[in-house]
Image 1 (cartoon, rainbow, N blue to C red):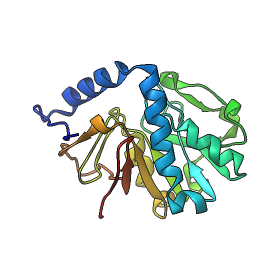
Image 2: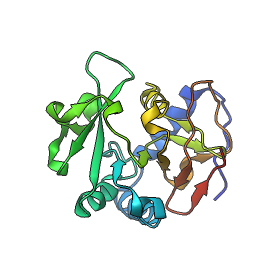
Image 3: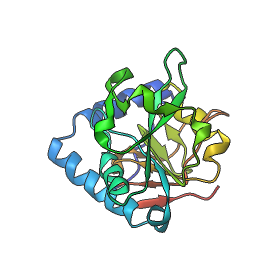
Image 4: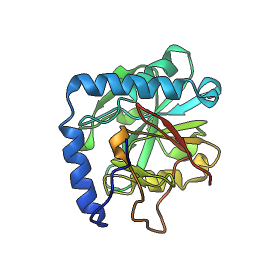
Length: 200
């Protein structure tokens, strides 16, 4: 599949287009593609050796990182999930959960750890971070929802030693994204068709 070509360099226009395409996906495709993406990530040596994994739970047809979260829990390793910090736009706290039932609907309707489980991200040192996105490009740059949550999180020292893995559908891979100085790239993107590695 050829990378989606950006005709409008505006991030907002691309966000609208990618949201539209993602939300139009059939549930059967989401399930099949998510399983394929999860299999690619699970095959990574770093996933097998990671003692602490930061994942997310999907919303609005995102690739289902919950499949990988379940594998982490089943293997007895530490699973972290993000929570939007109240009254601090763009900031995430992290919670260590023992069960996905520890996640409840939070801001934006996203399943997040219960508030009492959450602390500042600096309390953790994940070995692998699963990153959602609306689009990723051939340099590993990511287009998020626009709040800057993951750009801020990935800029923290606690993320410096982690392998950052974007999860996406093949159509979310684009040739090049408009970049800002604060944008953070990922180390690789796994889609249902391919694993894309990027040199930093």
